[in-house]
Every structure is written in structure tokens, then in C-alpha cells.
Image (cartoon, rainbow, N blue to C red; front, top):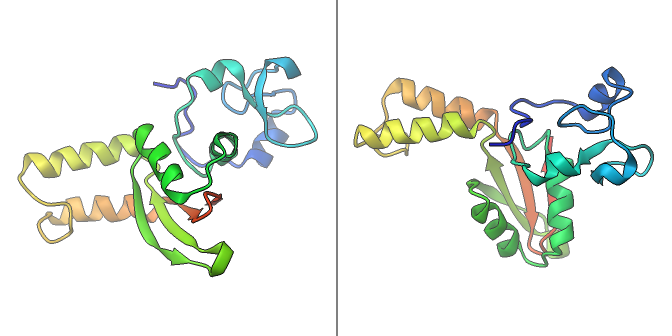
Length: 168
């Protein structure tokens, strides 16, 4: 697993103020421009270094939005299904949260569970007890835990055109 995974939301601007000499948002080290896989902003040298990029896994989608949006833009997806398939191939599950927009700006919003380890643990627990994760067959504690995970999920809007907006 990725050593420097962001498991909680971290504001990149506050991080930059607290770490003025660091370049990589993940390992926190100062890197030369040629050591960076992606820079998040036109000005400056803050982003993700090549070493961290090689092992990157999404932890907290809102914190990781700069990397995810860059990866998806580089893929050049032109359809929503391509973006959804990318998430699925990477082992991430998105939960549909409704449609939005009109005409060229139409798409579907999804919830991304940020604490995937706890989510997988809860799903295994529910399955082990022979219950269904739909709220009707879960006990009160399981329902409470699942609701908390959805409450802290990050919303990702995927346009029919393949564009992505991560709400943070």
C-alpha cells in the first residue's frame, strides 16, 4: 500500500504554508522540478514527486483531487463510462448520488468513501453475518457506521463528456 496515503482531508494551501520548503504533498520532501510527476499549480513546485506517483493510491479523494483530476485528464476520457471504469479497475467503488446539469454540462454525481479500509471491514462484517447492506437487515451499530462513512464521503461529479469535478 502507498506509504504516504492521505487518510484525512488536508488543505493543500494550509499545507504549503506550514511546509514552505517541501515540494511533494505526499512525502513532504523538497524535490527538483525534474523529480516531480505533476505540479498542482502553474506557479511553484508543489505537487507529487515521481517516487510517490509510482505507488499512488487514493486515500481521501478531496485531498487527492489534484492528482486524480490530473491522471484522468491525461487519460483523455471522453465518456462518463470510461471514468467509471478507471475507478473500478483501480479497485474503488463509487456510489451514485443523483444526476445534475443540463445539455453539455449534464452528468452524474457519486459518493467516494474516503475510509476504504473501514468500509471493506464493515462490508465483510455484514456479509459474515448474512445480512444485506441496505439498511433493512443491518443492526443499529452497522447502520450507524455506514451512515457515518457516507456522511464523510467526497462527492465527485462526472460529466457525460468524461470531465470530472471533485467537490471538497
